[in-house]
Length: 444
Ligand SMILES: NC(=O)C1=CN([C@@H]2O[C@H](COP(=O)(O)OP(=O)(O)OC[C@H]3O[C@@H](n4cnc5c(N)ncnc54)[C@H](O)[C@@H]3O)[C@@H](O)[C@H]2O)C=CC1
Ligand SMILES: CC(=O)C(=O)O
Ligand SMILES: [Mg+2]
Picture 1 (cartoon, rainbow, N blue to C red):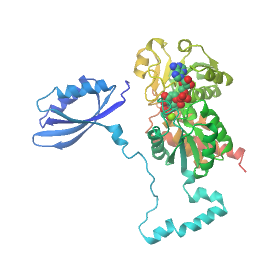
Picture 2: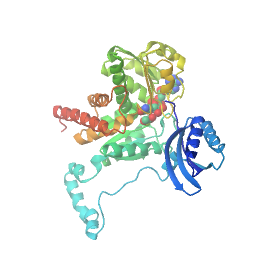
Picture 3: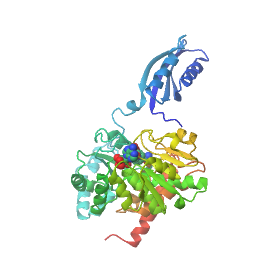
Picture 4: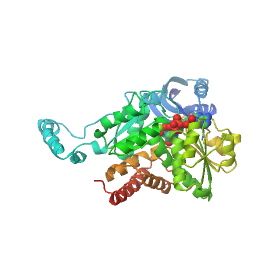
């Protein structure tokens, strides 16, 4: 499938006669545009106005689509072109809402003063009760320092807020969890750790997001050690879980034994290194990697992986190739070996489109739209919060990957993210491992 990141709504007026909408849709298709929704806005005796959502590969293609419609003439007009994605973000994507109806004075006194004071006292006497009488146990901080926002780089945490709001929306939609974005204006590990430590008690868990490497590794490790609540850097472990699930499915379909396959990782940053660690822990014997930074190669080596000298060598040697570099178009079609599995996961644009990879001979190919950590993090946090676990462990992550793979229909690499079953199954798998671990090592 071609990557069509430009989504616009074109407002088109046509004469109210049969056949005119067909002319417009044909004109859009001829210029290479892909049609999404069509909504009729007005039907008059003489003319009809419709909103037509069009997905394009580039602004040049969008211009060609508009030109193609306009050239139809004979009463067919483009009135306006609006940017749906920007429009959808007007006012932000999330807000805090009350779970209580406040209609009477007695409601007010129950929700707020004086009634609330009794609840404060109950929690003061037994802080554990905050889990029952506040939203803390169902709230996760989504913390970024803005240094690795998608593949856009260090654009700052305010510019990254739309991503954090997106994660919060997904937490709510798929797991019923309140996600609260926290935008840091420091990426110094000491300051980040200290800031999160000072605010952690308002949250049931901490999701670190789009924090660049290598400082993300130290920040996560220290927070995991020092905080009594689950902490997970999603770009590391959420991505590794979903990638492992996708590769398990690909191996099932191609009759390849994953543990015997040679797996190559291009880009050994937050996502890439965690993917390597996850695959090696799963039992992959030969895990190769490349990165343009020597220190990243050293890190791979320290975990038992094999650093290679070039991407060409990796492409030549590996059966399964995963890329998380943030560099669009990095993998050229001529580098692909017949029968390879190619997961080019960078957002918003992959290292190679699945369409190009399959055309070049890949047996399976996917990008970051389908193999995306959205399949993991909502259920992972639902599971640990349900269990009251204080850590997210490696066995929980493997169980999450297995649950995702088990929800995948044959022929697909991963389930559809809107399939509610996948999030429920991930939560169930994580919760049951968490409970087992807590039985073995109950916290004091
Ligand atoms: N599909 C998904 O669920 C996810 C996708 N990603 C994507 O992965 C990409 C990387 O994200 P992070 O790991 O968080 O960033 P990062 O900045 O921690 O890592 C990027 C790594 O790629 C390396 N790199 C850059 N250009 C390279 C090249 N030409 N050859 C070899 N190595 C190169 C860098 O040196 C760095 O080590 C982003 O585009 C992000 O959108 C990240 C997390 C989840
Ligand atoms: C999906 C995601 O977390 C990323 O691209 O950074
Ligand atoms: Mg991310």
